[in-house]
Amino acid sequence: MKWQGRRGSDNIEDRRRMGMGGAGGLGLGGVVLVLLVGYFFGIDVTPLLNGSGLTGGGAIQSDVALTEADQRAAEFVSVTLADTEEVWGQIFRDELGATYTPATLVLFKQVTQSPCGDASGATGPFYCPLDKKVYLDTDFFTTLSQRLGAGGDFAAAYVVAHEVAHHVQDELGILGKTTALRQRSSEAQANAISVRVELQADCLSGLWARHAQETLGTLERGDIAEAMNAAQQIGDDTLMRNAGRRPMPDSFTHGTSEQRQRWFATGFEGGSIQACDTFSSADI
Image (cartoon, rainbow, N blue to C red; front, top):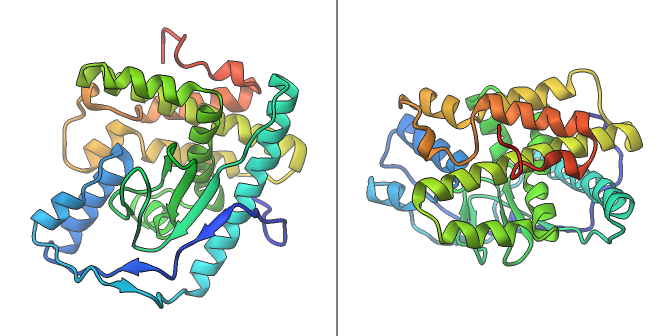
């Protein structure tokens, strides 16, 4: 992905110099396993960590050290966010005759607050519709690459694009409707709705990638393969197997690896918001 030296977004809220300390009671492997479950199943596993002997002072650190890698990741996120703003602005104008209002992206390290709850390594990247902000600890990119085997800058861009896609769903009125529907549903039904929401976000990410290539020319050879590999590695079934659990479809919240790859490809090949209607599709 061609991103160095390009325009960054003004919609970045940098909280990385404010964080909370942490310590260990679980072994490293145990901590990683619990965090992975939280990352990809949309679960705040902080109580699990606390209850398992993970202790921490909880004191605010006013001078969190930022490495060169932290700065590079922040620049990358800023450029990627700017690309989503340009692409979605154009799509909204051309397809909907509407104005796209960009999301703000909050960068943090370790933990920060959001109206949707604490943002931390346990929650992973997420979009909060209450303040229309994406929350991201760039250390997640290291987890994505080293722990999950989804390396490459476009794999990281896919993560950003997926969370921004939830904001697009919010702008379209989809997120509010599905959230209300999930609240009136059984757990299994709510999970099924969540899967369609997440797969649509994957599709919209693919749509963004197509337009980024056509209008910005930023994709390079191998970028789509990186995104598809990331989708493979973070499918519910793959994550459950890697965690030593038997895949249970009723508990899926994001979709299988095959579904996530297929809907990303659908968005990339379809080229329109209409192509990403996971809610009307009989076969997701």
